[in-house]
Length: 445
Ligand code: IFM
View 1 (cartoon, protein in one colour):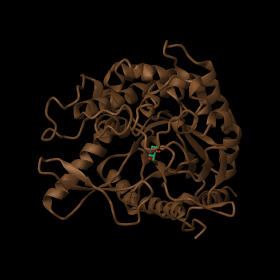
View 2: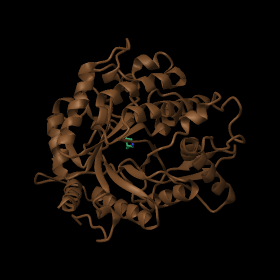
View 3: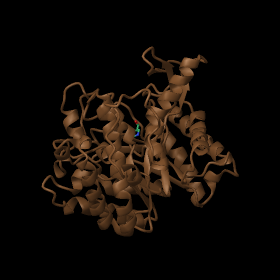
View 4: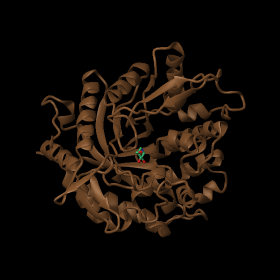
């Protein structure tokens, strides 16, 4: 298989469906000396935190190579480019604005506009400035207000260049992986803190939304959440209940306050001390109307019951698995989209991330990545199935444009549709990228 094929009547082939590629600042930008250090710089400097001992100092050197990267994006035939802004490139530790940092993104936005590529901007993709972490980070309620100011500065400067703003990317990862599992920056393991951080992140979102709307009335404003549908390991009642609980804890905890202004009822699981401190009015701030919800999907998760009333995830062992060890489960994408649409009154959805780290095989100057290609084929069909079943999906973004810094995994795991040779920084479109390019270019004709 070298092509991606969709049914001729697929909504994905319609003119108004948006296809794009996605990246995030810390994962590609490099040029760390030109911005404030962030929590991921600190985390990378701690021995044992990142599998290959690497960091984001150079990454894909995108800050210096952005023009060539933009040509590459344009050559793909995409409708949109989703990227994140580095907070520490915009606001300095003393509160002053880094005009050079702002100018970088403004230039990028101007060039995207000149090529008729819609800009999907994410304000926060996990790279909290270290100076804010030193004041308590997301555990400090003030960080939500600092975020609102950052949103104000960015949205005033970017003005009408942006098609869509997402306040946060995957608050689950910042809160749960960073403060409960401890495998992401800042590397803490504390349930109460994880829940509190999640609340402050959602508060930050809610505070920023009216600012974004005011400064950019013509843009679409929303948030990006990651979803992994939760399945029971067996048909035992305890496992079924464990999967439901995991869904409440990992998925609904982030979505329900946004859409319904309340947290899932986990009062049987969370002690009063573990419950976040929620001030009067917070949930009203959080439950702002959304123009869209970004859905990031990679895999499903299987859970079994624990004797203490909690759940454990069962690591997949049977192929097909990606290089991350994640099960390839395309029907999970259709299912989560259907589950969410049945459970909530949703705004329009975008699949803001989907993709796979797989093995790349170099042969005669060509990068063959048949597993990634098959992954895209299957997940595009899964998106198509959800739309046919009535789900309002308006766009799809491949994660990622480039191989990049995969957080705690370092550079060993490659998610790109473009291969990056890090020593030379040379970019090579992989076979999966060529197949997506053919699909996207054909739509543009
Ligand atoms: O690389 C990450 C990205 O930063 C957020 N979503 C998941 C991707 C793959 O792990």
